[in-house]
Amino acid sequence: MKEFRKNTIEQFVEKLPLEKFIPAAFLIFLLCFIVLSLITYNNIDIYKNSLFLIDNTNKVLKKADDINHHLSTLQLKRRGYVVRNESKYLQEYNSSKLSLSGSLNDLKALTSENPQQQLESKKLDSLSNIMVSFLDSSLVLFESEKKASEEQTRLTLLSQDYLDNCELVTSKIKANELELLNSRQDKSRSNLNNTQL
Image (cartoon, rainbow, N blue to C red):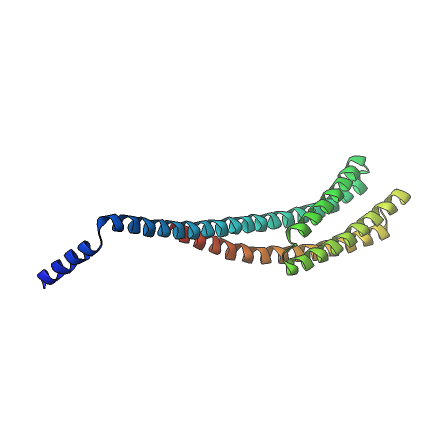
């Protein structure tokens, strides 16, 4: 049996001279190298896209928190202006309105690829605009009356209801984004493992 194997190997070596074997081995090596390079490049590209999506999700979560902060700040600055009658509170109120508008626009841009989140963003924009309108109206009444009134209190309470609704919407957005974040991180880890393999 050993002699048969030995004879077979010797016959194979005789039929395939070294001059033909080296170029064939080199071509096989080159082909394997190209295929592995393409697979690695593809996995790295998928990994980079996953990282981009994870970053986008983190930005959406931050914007949702920023919006909640701006909405609460509006309530506080309005209250500070009415209680203290100092213009710095009114300036900070107006500044917070501008920041809120910018954050809402950023959120819409960040969620443009997700139809469900886009609907929630539009809903949040609508609710926050109504809330700000109530706060603005209460400030207009305060400016005209120069004192707190029952109507101002009613408008402020209505704005608080809309603030609560806005917080519910942002919590929905954040919950959805956290689900996406988990799936995107799993996909990213999987692609990283594939690349390393």
